[in-house]
Amino acid sequence: MADVPPAVSERKPLTRITKDRQRAERPPPCRQCHARSWWNGWRVVFPMVATLVAGIVEQWELPLAKAKCGSCKHSFTCYPPGIYPRRRYQLDVVADVAGAMVLGGASATRAAAEVHATSSSARRWVLWVAALAEPRDLLATAARLDPDAAAGAGLGVLPARAPAAHVLAALEQLGCALLHAGVAMVERTGLGRVLGWQHAAHGAVFGLGDAGLHPSPATVLGCEKGDT
Ligand SMILES: [Zn+2]
Image (cartoon, helix red, strand yellow):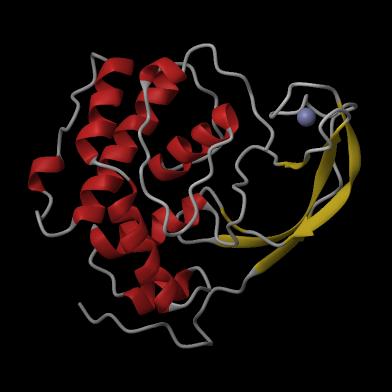
């Protein structure tokens, strides 16, 4: 199949959406010392957000509420569900692009053009996903959360030389297991669900270049909704 980037005239227009300021009456307690905190202004970010349709993205102008601890003076930003810190391209977008490349056979140029990103970003995302976690760790956690699911099903047919494909497939299974365990998530992809859950429950943020995602079933239960 010919895989050439769409001409500019064919490219889907980018929808820009301005979000209203939204915050709870009081901020959550400080994650570092658990003391009370107070609201401390706003900062505006411009994330690229996936829609329910893979390959269609929107750019948001999104005000994020900032808070400050009344005791230790730690400042932190409160993120709404589905928005991941320090990422212009949100996790579901990254998962869609990486999946199109390593599972769908799309070129970096075409996969990136779909979401108004650069091909070098798309290649970087694939490398990041490949190094993010060991598929067997993800599948082991998924199997313990949801013993009835066929953990690892389908991974055997993936090419051994495409580690990102294995990680993405294992993340999908763990994401489904999290849903099965009752974790509420707005993300659509396994990558988005697993990392979004790690962030919401534990404040863990995995930036580009970060690896070492080691989820544990125990961390699902009794976790608190986080804020950082
Ligand atoms: Zn504090």
